[in-house]
Picture 1 (tube, rainbow, N blue to C red):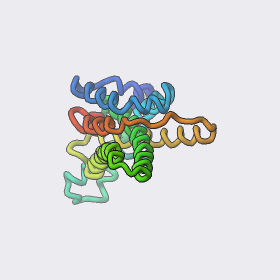
Picture 2: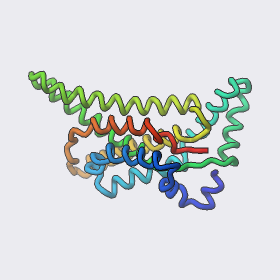
Picture 3: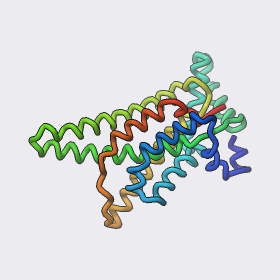
Picture 4: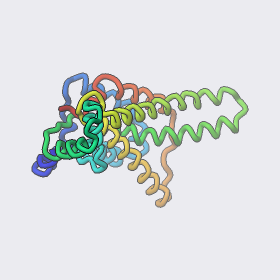
Length: 231
């Protein structure tokens, strides 16, 4: 709860070291390996860890109150919105005084996926411009693979958003945590790109790792990928 975070603030980061079971752990590791290589090349070691840790902490602090929104949607789905004015108050009280538990590094993995999605979009733009300038039909094959990967990543994002607004299948905070981590990853990419632009440093060229991101999105959607928040 919020009070326990104030008493033990370090748990906003250390909860990522705990996982529900081995399937949960390996699902996060698989997603991290598939989506983390390119972002590590782009950000560097310190930037990569800052992105990962920031996603973990942002999910615990929940500055956008998405966890409360997910619980409100869950209460509405179970009550049939019979008392629409009451559910926001119940969700707020529940979040402030009730017990909730976050476990697993899914928010950090989602942050890495958010940054990698931005890199994938940059790579897609480069491939699209190259395909338009090239008369060879074979130039569209890498673009097609990159498009598939981008759609996979966006599908993961859409699924998590649907779980947030519908309340999901349980009162867990998984969807809110995943989206909070993803948003942090996108923000980290934008901040890092702006810093490099102003400092005049040249980022490493995006390479063809987009297909791996699509696999990472599938992995995160699979076994254990939605266990970040458990009650």
